[in-house]
Image (cartoon, rainbow, N blue to C red; front, side, top):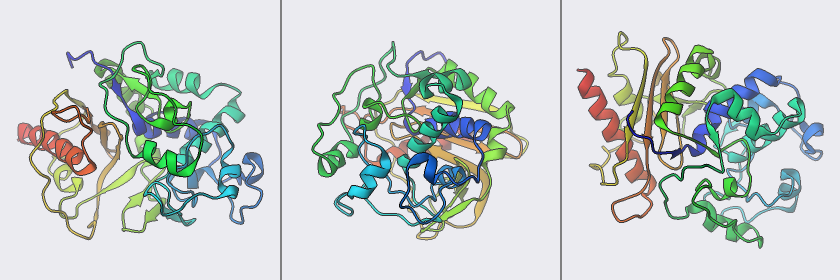
Length: 323
């Protein structure tokens, strides 16, 4: 907790900023098609779907300043990149676009800019920041951007988020940062306000059998899943625990994972593209948050499996310390 570095929270903005605001200001089951311009969509479009990633929206599209309905009508090179994939309504497909829409809805219904709404509600810092986070190279979103549009990728900046969409001004799914002290205060408020329990409801299921609530994913106990570790945290061990690491060394390899996610646990979770991770047990408010970077020993960006190994090692050390 002595660390004063700023961590780019990336997608942890979804459960800590956007979902709480949506649950506080928006009706969950109202059809939003007309309000958002999805006039050729056959199925209703609801906040419940958007929060649970089950609205049938693709994972990602470049934020060019156009409205999302216009982009979807024009089409995109589906299959050209993992981020450019089609989705099906009712099945969870993790999508930044749903949270982009939630950000727009919140601005429409409150009359305030999302950046200020989020900062006031969470205590986190919206970009651009006064303190620069640890830099990592451009990621897959920058490569997918070039496949999907001729609009140039937004320029980098040391005080802007790493995510290309966030650099372009995306609201809802990224764009917030925190020092460890800020993060601890945010988590205390988040838990005390009862948001974990409101978000931790089985709302939709992904094609691989994993489950999503209203802004959090259910942690499963299958082989090599984080639920395996989290189930070792005793029920008498409670509270908010912030684990901070600025290491750039590689962690031991992840354990082998099974093909089936296994049974659901009492834990729910969310990951940030830049490294941070959030695990919460809503039944008693126990919360474990990892503030960790995604940069490797040579300044490279760790791939997904290497990043998960770093998170796994941090959690393992923490659980062994409890014992």
